[in-house]
Image (cartoon, rainbow, N blue to C red; front, side):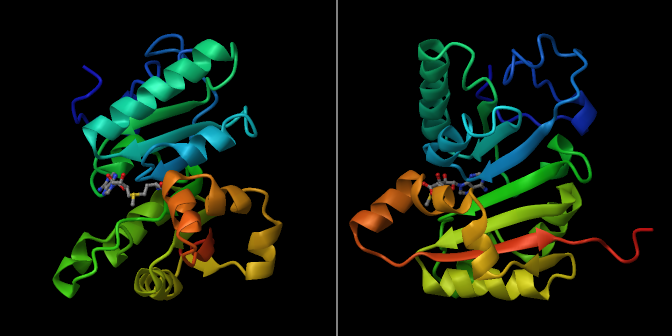
Length: 222
Ligand code: SAM
């Protein structure tokens, strides 16, 4: 079934037809569109569902490790597709552990946007290795991102924000985008407000710390 954690041996073997049948009528259908936006730990899917009608030409995938949450989002998208013929065909959800095997799904330079919205904070020091931003994982994110692509992070936890900024600042292939430029990006308001966790933080009048980075060219990648 769709609900098993399965990983393609390489991106070319990934069957996208289950996710985007309008774009990929069959597993081997040739399609010049590839998934470009990935929402890592997408939860209940609020961001993807806000972006789908705004970016109808971009394929968007949410990655979520919890089975129940994945099932909920799957049904949510199914209902939206049924109620809005022709729409929401570009958004889908995948159950997976995003800390593993991302390069099995995406080719080098494939993604133009990656989202890390209100990730689990893993407060205790001995749990920090479970954080979704780390040196090892940033190397993978850099690999699957296109030069010029944008990685968005937001959290209500100051300590986690500082951790993500520290690791991203130290990485040679990511460059922080100024707050001014972030605020001109039409996606940013959705990053702040569209997810279920973001709405909860707003209800509780919590802080939201945003940091966005551009994937820059590797000087050794001639
Ligand atoms: N981004 C959503 C939002 O803003 O509403 C959800 C935030 S929630 C605090 C973090 C989500 O990340 C949870 O739904 C959790 O199941 C998911 N998650 C945690 N680790 C993950 C992993 N390794 N792979 C995929 N999803 C993961």
